[in-house]
Amino acid sequence: MDRKRIAATVVALALAAGIGLAVLSFTTRIPDAESLPDEAAAGLEQLKTVQGRLQLGKDDQILEYELWVQRPRHLRAEAELEGLDRKAVYILAFNEEEAWTYDPLLNLATVTDRTEGAPAAGSRFGTSLLETMPDDVLAALRAGELQIIGEEAVAGRNALRVQVLLPPGQSPLKEAGEQLTVWLDRITYYPLAIEGDTGFRMRFDFIIFDEEIDPRTFVFFPPPGATVRRIGE
Image (cartoon, rainbow, N blue to C red; front, top):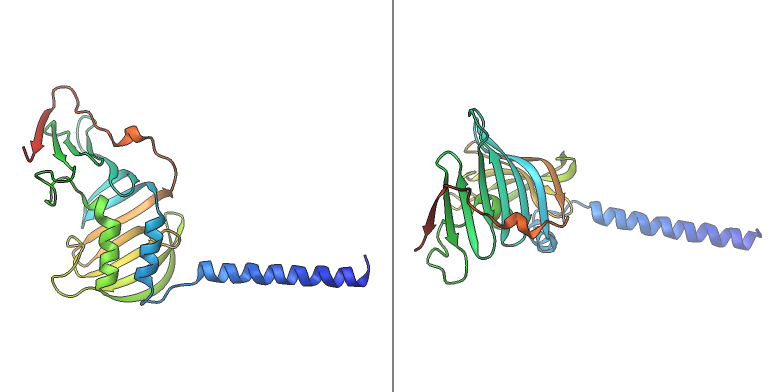
């Protein structure tokens, strides 16, 4: 190889390396407090599905959930209740038409019509914190005073740790209070963990994004003998 070709190759490699470093710098850049809400909104807008395992609750009242989400209106969550002499699984199954909640202790299935114009539309029925959580966190980022602490690993993913101070009585996450710490996935900005001044805690220990989910996951059929209660009828 002559000197000209060697020189051209070196220049090409240098340019490629420079471009690669520029891309890496952009993708790993930590946003500032002012731009974070808009960047989080853009990330969540692109997110299609979430599957994972998380712990959720207050103080020592913590449940472990298996979670499947297809944004924006499909969710299934299952929590096995411990300390019983039989297997009992609490189930949430939401889709665009219906929201089912099944309490195995009462053998009671509650269903809410989620179609537009339904009697229970806009009420607390037919929704769940597990469904609204990413949008509630985004609303908190927009409404609060933010301090970006840095990056940490949560559920095997790189997360941005952010402290949020909200105006009194204006927390979109009422369960968590007005002083929050949230850990946002660096790519999707989906919340991987939340801690609040009320003792509220949520943390994933496993999570994957944008993997296809069987549509039957979000359909629920009450077990034989279950009492079915319909909200809004």
